[in-house]
Image 1 (cartoon, one colour):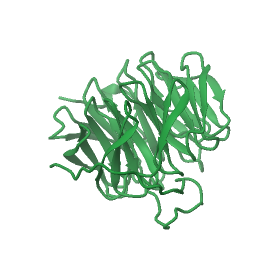
Image 2 (cartoon, rainbow, N blue to C red):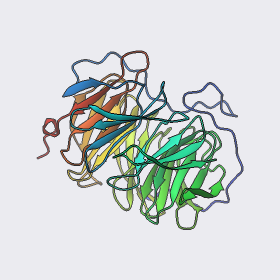
Image 3 (tube, rainbow, N blue to C red):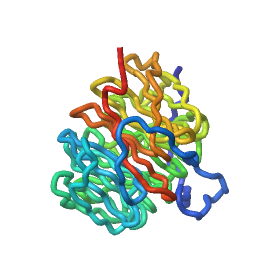
Length: 341
């Protein structure tokens, strides 16, 4: 179904709130949040401690897992096969979500409490660049096909554009509280965690080129190729597959009850991974035919499974247990736990 698409002149709406801080949004509308998870029961695979209330996680083609942590703030470089820590990189602010600029990095790490964007070498842990002034509480960042980095400015609304480590432009809201973002070719598709829309930005022209309503209230997004992205409708209990050209077309809706939140894509096996935070479950969906997604299995996870990633070497699935009220952890689910006919 073709979604409503319109080119917009961007409104200067400022002052969205964080999903973790108490500062309310201007109109009092709460952001979409993961569920407060119950105690976990018999997580699939192995579980290792991962100190620091982990959130975002990515895995490089070389099998290095990089996890964003808090208290102390930084990123942990891990062996993706075992969860054994290789090194810890301290940061001046707390990172939330991470992304890879290429199969082996660098890693993009927006720092929410210092308003900076780090570019990190996942092999050595070296900070390759630090870009200040990337918005108020930058939440997520991706690199579009032309090489432009697009950062979501969660508490300021809109996005910030970065090239070669330098801010080259910004656009105000737009999305009042932009959260997750997916790189779809030359475009960055942004989810508004306070509303029910997605916003499409061009990396080459640094312009807003599309917008449309979607679901009830979104949080995160992930790319499924050059023209397709998935969006977690956390308040609506679903994940949507949308084609971005930059026109927005709905391809499919996937049932995902109890606050879907973390998303990842296994490109080799054409599997979409969805964490269901209200039930400590990982939903695995076959999207080889995006128009007819098929739920393959549901796997039990660690408590508060807010983020998920895939090891491209082995197909193993890594899930972070992000509950700061208990021992935080990393779950490693063997690829063989998912049987795809």
